[in-house]
Image (cartoon, rainbow, N blue to C red; front, side):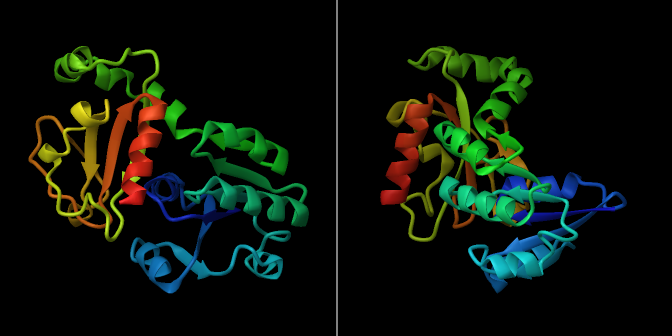
Length: 230
């Protein structure tokens, strides 16, 4: 049975762990703190709390011995690069899968030793073809001012103290203010399922909720920066 260590708490890391067959893989989630570990443990996964910057602690969880595959799902590319370098130095044969937030960081991850790079923008662009054929979505696209040749998707979490907190989805007006489309919301009070913005009830955003938006990469980056600053 292959053993997989997953670093970085996110919707994508939870989805990856959920989809892995427990009969084929032994999974351990590596948390930054006890609170994060408790959230994942509630979903039935084995968890450990370590400092990923400490090589001895990486070895203690099995890197270099029984961990076959490493998933680097930290939100910051710099953390994924650091973890990749450290793990590759310890184990030359380990398989490293890393997510990238900025496509420009992909080469850094490859140079650091990652075997597979996951670009959510690229994946979401391919996966949304079916959704884009729905009339409501197509009408919205036709009404927006940007072309359809630079469409990307991104997840934006509502952090504590964010200006998005307590905002209704109808008040975001992303198409007017940011040239973006709101695809849906992951409302933590209702679970980890994506609720589409069209045809479902309105949501009032709380800390921990996640917006899924679509638009040009430069607009997504600008909106993320604005949300982080406020």
